[in-house]
Amino acid sequence: MPDLLAQNIDSQGFPSACRVSIVIKALNEERRIEKAVSSALTAVASIGGEVVLADSCSSDRTVELASRFPIRIVQLAAAAERCCGIGPQLGYQHAFGEYVYILDGDMEMLPDFLPQAVAYMDRHPEVGGVGGRIIEMNTSSLEYLARMERASSHMAAGDVDRLDMGGLYRRNAIEEAGYFSDRNLHSYEELDLAIRMRAKGWRLVRIDVPSVTHHGHDAPPYALLRKRWKTGYICGLGELVRASWGQPQMPFLWRDVRELRLYIGVMVWWAVLVLLALWPMPVALKCLALLAVALGPWVLMGWRKKSFRKATFSVVSWAFNVAGLLRGMLRARTPPVRPVDSVVVQEPPAHAGIS
Image 1 (tube, rainbow, N blue to C red):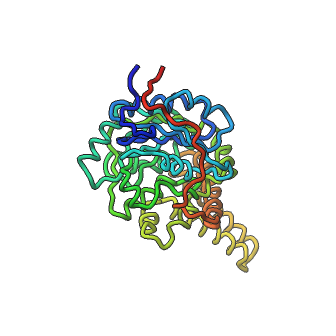
Image 2: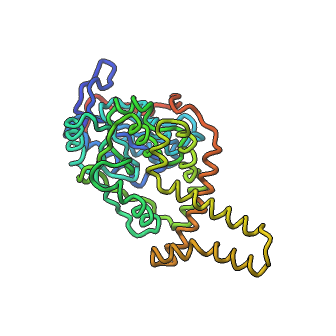
Image 3: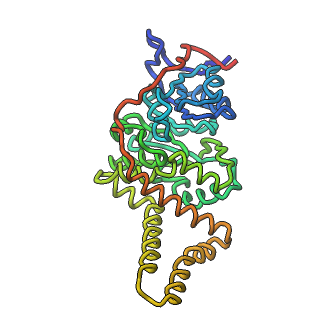
């Protein structure tokens, strides 16, 4: 069997020299967790590293299935703290790597990426993070299509403003930025890390090498919007605005997040509708004006997307996201540098392989 943890182990069983830590964040991923873990172990085998599963108190068999592999498994002490931002920070607390890769539980690492990414970062000490090409397996949903339209610039090879969908980060760049991920964020955790790193002068680069496959959500788009409202995921941008306000990273957030400016425009649209409703004018004229302003975004998006179905989803999605933005800005915050309360479920053996 191959040695999947090619690293030096100290007297207490911990790695004394670890090149790469792959942190897998997971919540109820029993369908895909074995493939995610197996692919991560294969990816680190050639360069020396470890795999850390950061579990947010899964209620299915995620931890049971993952425990069959020689990896470290850590879990939130309190399920009430679940959110997208806390998982990476939980895993980072228990990781030893010089470089740290964040992987979702519904992804699979591709074996050629890590060696090339590490080599690139070794050659470019000013680069704080490197991402690769994402192979998306779910290409038919409205959610996927909308995300690809928004993300076209920072998913292309070259210098990028963020590493959405996972990346390899330099530990000393993370430390300089303050922490790996903000435990308060219900989404946008990768953007948060990116703008904090870039505010410190670090570059982020995407190389033209496939890094992961991603299976994504297969829920109907409107059901997914409802789920994101219920879980708080939709509050992430508002939470990030609150975290960044008055900080060096705020100009990067304003400049790079097009949807933030879009949502402010939606708020202006809503304000105009309210003002028109209150403005003293003949009833017939008021009704015409309200109808014209209310339908304007549908007409514009229908013309741009050449599809009433896509236009309707866009406008409804705006409404959800603006409400989430406002909700997120009002959320209380826990200091992001405070250690995440956790339980170590499993430590890997000093030397092990996949049977």
